[in-house]
Image (cartoon, rainbow, N blue to C red; front, side, top):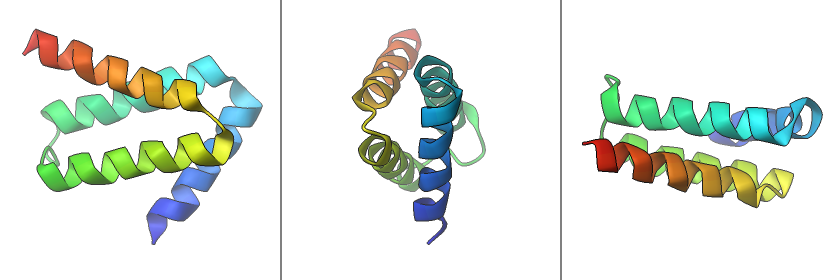
Length: 79
């Protein structure tokens, strides 16, 4: 239930604060939490992917999805 309202708020930030800044921040935070945080689980990864998809769809932000995939690939290479 919170996913929809939070993704809507992030999409609004994406439009008002700059695409690159929001893309990098969101992707880096989610990837860090998924890799290192206490919530690192398959369920968290699924919710994070749904969140990125929702924000990208609401803001027309395919670069957000691309940045997320790029950040995830870089993290996996480091592992």
